[in-house]
Figure 1 (cartoon, rainbow, N blue to C red):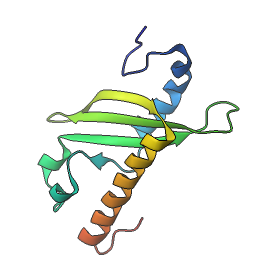
Figure 2 (tube, rainbow, N blue to C red):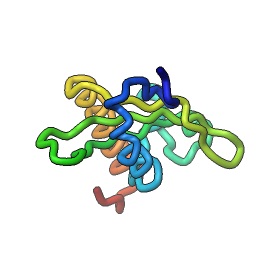
Figure 3 (cartoon, helix red, strand yellow):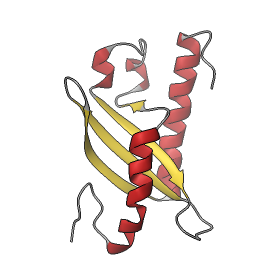
Figure 4 (spheres, rainbow, N blue to C red):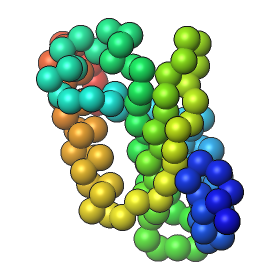
Length: 114
């Protein structure tokens, strides 16, 4: 049974609060598209789709869960396209893209602090 936003398994329901927290408090978003398209971080076309990533500890678990949320931009907001729990290996790929994004921002804005 799919309960929405890509959360289909009953055990994933526990992650819903973490997912909501990520949507509400994500400090940085990764724009979709290739790094070559990131020349101007202020270009509105860059932000037509974006990804949020986060790691959360749920309950007494000692291992964090990895959450990826894909957003689609509208004129005045974003719509959740999908959200899912991903493996450590898949999360590392997103983390590497995030690190490249921060590097791009650092180069674009001399004063940008990470």
